[in-house]
Amino acid sequence: MPHSPSYEVRKKLETLRNRFQDKTIREIDCLVASIFNASRNAEAVGELIAASQLLHRLAGSAGTMGFPRLGEQARKLEIALQPLADKVVLGADREQIRRQLTHMLAAGLESQIVGLGDLLGSAEPVSTGWHQPRAFETCAQPVLLIQEPDQELAQLISQGLSLYGYRLRSLGPQEDWPESMEDVELVMVRDTLLQDENAGWSERLHSVPAICFSEAHDFTTRYRLARFGVDACIDEPQDIPALADRVEQLLAEGLATLTGRVMIIDDDPELLEHYRLVLTSGGLEVRALDDPSRLLAELAEFRPDILFMDVQMGHYQGPVLARMLRFQAEWVSLPIIFFSSEEDRDLQLDVLARGGDDFVTKPVSDEFLLRTARIRCYRARQLGKLVSLDSLTGLLKHGLAKTELNREHARCIRSGHDSVVAMLDLDHFKRINDTYGHATGDTVIKALSNLLRHRLRNTDIIGRYGGEEFVVVLPECSLDKAVEVLEALSQDFARLVFNAGNEEFSVTFSAGVAALNAFASGEKAIEAADQALYQRKRAGRNGVTVAIEEPPCR
Ligand SMILES: Nc1nc2c(ncn2[C@@H]2O[C@H](COP(=O)(O)OP(=O)(O)OP(=O)(O)O)[C@@H](O)[C@H]2O)c(=O)[nH]1
Image (cartoon, rainbow, N blue to C red):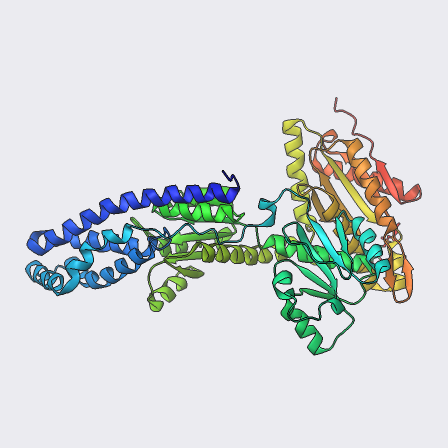
């Protein structure tokens, strides 16, 4: 028996579908009974309101649950019966409504209503079509694939990028690409190898971030490369820090579009669980909520990137909830996307005007739901980054880095684990700017930030503290280990070769480290790390100095 995550998910979706089927068979029986009841007895025409609500719900959910024909038929019947239900609500003459219903049943509605249950007979197979992020599928460590006919250059690039912690696999110019690209994180390929239009490049390159080494700047070549699926063109791949920067950006973009935090509110439990399964199996973090009254508490705790919500949930109306959320400044910019089976654009625009951001029309397919959620999360995060991340390096800005540092200080004092803070500063950086210009100086700053981001753990906190000064917090890490890691980083950084015109140069950095829990506050620990940094500067730079611990309070 296969036991992959997608198999598990498929089984769960099937179970949900069976549950939906059993419940809906019973609901359709009641629906048929109440419509016939209403056609026979004027006192019972009130039942048409619940009947049309049920048809509305089925129109929105049956397609997603694997019964698209049932969904379509429910929509037709909803449209037919809704005017009668509206008349009941408005208090029109009940006998007249009953007669109109009887007439409609005789004119063909009866067979359609009776036949509804038959549409539950065979479900479409559970789709497994949505793309799952690579990280969830494979165990092998991903590689960067390089195909560069100049073997010396290929070797230089492999060695340079391996300093950043990437694993490289170099292919000879005639060598075939691997059958499966599952373990390939990114490809780098020389433009001269991408000539043959019929060699299937488009298929391969569209499946993975791709950098092309190309000195051609003419429109025709660039257009061809873009059509093949190339994401970036680089004409001097020997400039390793610049290449590493592009690699880092493309990988970060790819990852960012696959992650996100989604909250969904819907009062239909099966549909809610279905959405949750689809989104979590696509790598998103999901909080599913069937009780709208818990919305504010759950939002504050989960802090989603986006919120999906149904338009009508029992007593609650989605647009009213959206308006209520906008009362609080912190939720003013939270993207809210409504699930709606309404095809009436005017009504949708009205809802948008009242606090929503977009609509997804039900029934929503799994693929569409996942893609919408990923794109929306990505955009929301990009906007969030503008506020909290440094634009040159993509690292945390000073204020946020300090907040995170204080949070980790509180955590390590509470739980007793070791954590470390380090201050890093580029050596003789003024000289770099003065000699090679500010733009080259920026490249050096970006190179160090890329190195830190790539070589440190995902859970480490990295911030740009000032111009050429960085702060790093290593949670759950001993002082000895931190010194070892930072020394290795400083040696590797010193080996990077930067290009400015025809000149090549290297840069070093100095670091001061302090054990976070040896100090009364994050602030004190950072001061101590700063002191240690300046001792290192005085002692000749290029290396790591440990701070003296705070004397215990008496
Ligand atoms: N290119 C560039 N330079 C920056 C940026 N922010 C600060 N700087 C420059 O960084 C230099 C820092 O110089 P100093 O503080 O004198 O230190 P230093 O030359 O690195 O010398 P030591 O720290 O003693 O090794 C200044 O020239 C700043 O203008 C930036 O974003 N980009």
